[in-house]
Image (tube, rainbow, N blue to C red; front, side):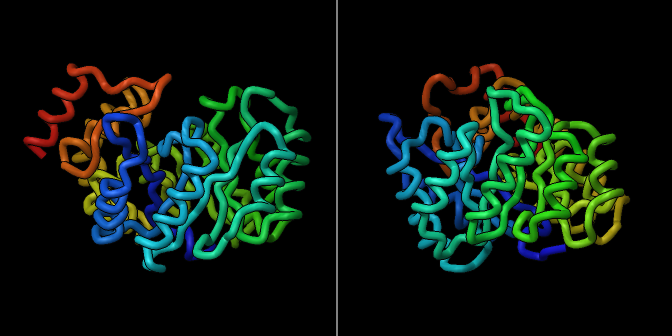
Amino acid sequence: MSTKFLGTGIAIVTPFKTDKSVDFDALKKVVDFNIENGVNYIVISGTTGESVTVNAEEKKEITQFIIKVNNNRVPLVLGIGSNDTAQVINEIKSTDFTGISGILSVAPYYSKPTQEGFYQHFKTISEVCPVDIILYNVPGRTAKNMEPSTTLRLANNFKNIVAVKEAANSMAQYYDLLKNKPSDFAIISGDDDLALGVTLAGGAGVISVIGQAMTKDFCQMIQLGLQGNAKDAYKLHYKLMELTSLIFSENNPSGIKAVLEELNLCSSVVRLPLVESTQELKDKINAFLKTY
């Protein structure tokens, strides 16, 4: 499988100032912190980056800023997805992909297409996209599961569809994909809590949320998983398990931003309709970090 998207990728947050504008100083701190602590690639403008409340001009500014800060140190993936296929095509055609290795494209949300609708959507994207495509299946947010048979059909038919970020939170679905995938197609976990098990079963690693905060241990855990060292990898999994659960208990990315604030990397500010984590959750996170 492609080594570009092997190991730990992070779905990077978009830091905001108190006035809700983008905090580029904090963004640089988060990028540098992650690269210096072992992250293998970075995903820009995913759900964790609050992509639905970042406008098109801000997205361009954030992308260009991360490309500059990254300075070719790790591959970058850009989130480009919608439930309007034509909108995705227009964005791809108007995007400068210099410095970008691939796109992460979410399965169409809200519209609840059939499996054939999913297939035709990504077929159309594949035919115009000049870089590698990582499919993103997250039925908890989209309201419709893209079934393994559809993912594998796309994997077999289009060379630039190189991976799927699978986030159905179903080991049975992961196993189906891992058993039947083409040899050069990557199954990437989109579930932090299942990431190690998926990696040990033959997956390519993870696109993580918690990985951008507990970076050294999380990246080491995934590398151990890729090496088949389950015993040592699970020690780190159990060490991280409580915090991994806590950050998703109210909302993502409110939880991870609370962690990053405690680590002095960025503020916990989010844009409406999201709200910051409750003080109760922040206290639990801070208690965990003090004893970590």
